[in-house]
Every structure is written in structure tokens, then in C-alpha cells.
Image (tube, rainbow, N blue to C red; front, side, top):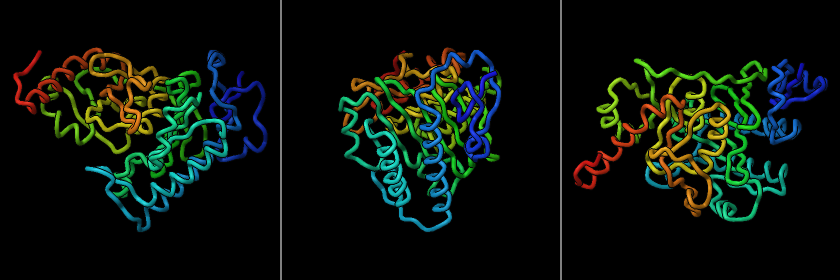
Length: 328
């Protein structure tokens, strides 16, 4: 059998320090998983997990205390906690991976590294779902993504309020750490398209497009939670069939980690025209790192069945907003 430590396959039993640590436990896994090629070593991943757990603990403690809130833009908020965690995570990853580029949400100057010749880029969101964090909710997360050759290779999403940590990638697999400290495989659970079809749509998109989508797909049930990454995980875990993002604000630190997990789960990640979500300079505004493409992230059955109708609903609303005749 094959041993697994922190989601990395080894040919030997874990060391005593790993066996008794809070981060990793040995378990048996099927032989076909040997074909997966993790992008990091056991030690590298262990250190990342420790960094994320520490950051999440700090966020969880800070949520119980007083912090300052600032508005960066329209309905775009940042707290003193975001900024402190951003500095900590930036320094931690710069120390661990000195040869790689590092982009963080709250360090605006770091966006320039997207245009450099780094082979690998670490893209970090210190608190994804800041509004949920401000409201002392349960659905914010600390997220890290590894971008290599314009492709998401690995992602980590930690929900501190739930003490749930997820990680993996398309050449790696999917893993989670429960509140009991055990590391286990995260098994994707497709939601079947049927009478109870759940679509995740953010509050802003529901206000703008929800009625038009419901008119075209009346059996859909809308749901929403704070963090982009946690929405993607809801789809992976079978709590929803599709996540749709339309409002043109999502950036690399929101998407890199979650879409690595989505790819590992076998989800379809495309735009309204069915083209794959891309991370190249032609598909991301280089100074803001906003994606040019709207996003559908879901089980292939859902995307195939619903994408054309969602696309038409979006066209209808945009024509109304511009006072143009509806197009089909």
C-alpha cells in the first residue's frame, strides 16, 4: 500500500513527528493515485499548512476583537486584519520560496510581478470574503494559489471559523483537514441536475441577473455564501451544481487556488461562450489583475445544460441596461 502524508504520496511510513503532529496522519490510498505528481515536497506542503493554520488562528481571534474597516472602492472593503495577514503571508512565502514571485491582494505593487518572467507565482488572498469577516460570519477564508506557466497548479483554502482546511491540484488530488486534525482525501460529489438544482450566485449578481436567469430556468434554486473559494468547494462537495460569477470584479488571488481545486475535482471552468478560463496576460487586466472573462464553475452536466440559457439571460439584462432590443 501507499502512505500519504499531507496529501503527498510516499513509499515509506511517516516519521514519528508527522505521525503525532496536528497537521498530518497516515492513511492508505489506492494504487492508481501513484500516477499523480504533487507540485511540492512533503516538507514544503507541511510548512504551507502551518502558515495557513497560523494565519487562520489570527483571523479567528481578530474577529472577536475590534478592528478598523476601510472602503477601497465601491462595495470593496479592507480591514486592518486583512493588511496584517497580508504582510505576514507575503513574508512567509518570500522566505519559503525566494526564487518565486509573490502577489498579494493588499500589496498593490506586487501586481507588477504578473508581468515578470517568474516561472512560478504564489497568489495570496489574506481574507477572501472580507464582508463576511466584517459581519463575524462563518464563510470567509485564507487562500493561496500556485500559478505556473499561466495555469493554476495548486490551491489551499482555509476557513478559520469552521476550522476546515482544503488543498490539492490537478496533478495532485484533493485533500482536507478536519477539525480533529486528520488529513483525508476530499472526494468530489457531483450534484445531479434535476428538480432540486442549486446554483451559487453572489448577492450582487442575484440583484442584477437573478430574475432573468430564473425566468429562463425556473426550477433553479439560488444560494450564496461569502468566499469565492468556499463557493467552489460547495460545488466540489455536491452542495451545489454550478457557481456563476458575472460582475467583473474577480481577481487572480480570488481564483487561482480555487480553480486548481476545481480542476482536480473534474469541474468545468469556462466563460459564457464556453471558452476555458485562462490566466494569461491576454485574459487578465495586467494592472488590476481582474479577469476579463465571466465564470461558470460546475459539473459538466450543469454547464452543458444551463450555460446557453444563462448566457442569454445576461444578454437580455445588458440590452435592457443599454436600452437595446433583446438579442438571441
